[in-house]
Length: 216
Image (cartoon, rainbow, N blue to C red; front, side, top):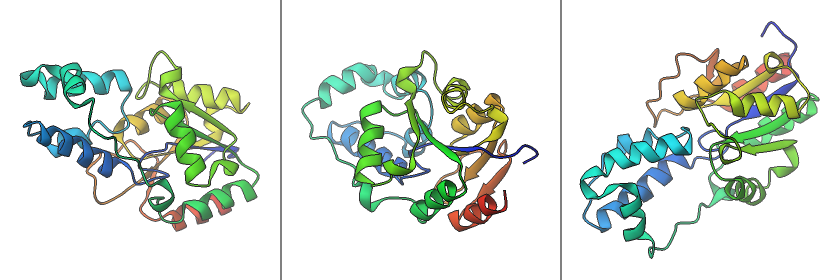
């Protein structure tokens, strides 16, 4: 980074918690239970995108079955799977957040998920004490890959976007952070095939990111 780092802005799903694969599996399993076979990778590729755009993508996937709204009606009575947040944190997340706060940096969670989901994840994962600000894409008129969510977080933390590092995994999230003018760090999980080429740096192990933070 060429500018002094003052904050780290985190996506939630796939960055703090290993939820995206579970969510895609649950969605495909629910579809199969009503006789619909979906492409798992297509479902997985909706991760990180704004909810309105994801809805359009699901509409396209389900167009031969009445679209997403019809799918929701047919599965409304199904039990919803609860995420075991305390058990599915990305390895070394606690140590990373502790390091960030020990370095005197501000923090935010910037997620396309709903506000209630974000609060539940942070609370059950016992990491809410490390987060200064949280924002959901549902609270904004536009979502990722638009930069609005990261610009809003920077403004609320009283920093310039270029003073923030964004930690993302999906191509939509990475694009959002880059368009906001932040330094973007991609967390690479080998399970996924996201295009992370626009990120400024990439890590597969948060111990490497901890060392990066310590050097700032």
